[in-house]
Length: 106
Image 1 (tube, rainbow, N blue to C red):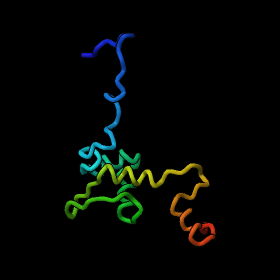
Image 2 (cartoon, rainbow, N blue to C red):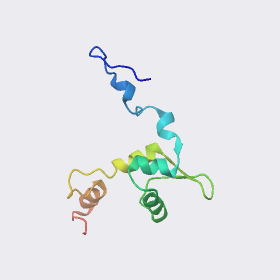
Image 3 (cartoon, rainbow, N blue to C red):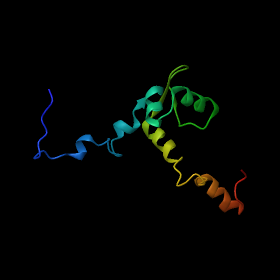
Image 4 (tube, rainbow, N blue to C red):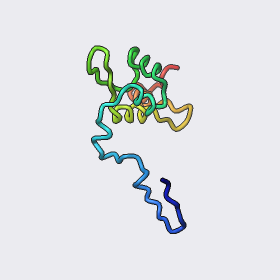
């Protein structure tokens, strides 16, 4: 049954917000490949390829055929790829430039 919303209804943003950063059960729980792919907005196959070739988020090999992810690792993976513009090389390239004094090779 749907409740009727009136003008006097107060919207509670906490009721619809994502779990907080401090909610360890949410962030450290093991999730399957499909849920990790949805979290990262990737296909299952792209996530598999990144896992096999390297460059994807950290994962947990539960058994020979069972792979799980933690949301916190998927979150850190996505945060490490944030860029301010298309010409932003990212923090690793900026650190390499600082050490060598030369821009990274294209």
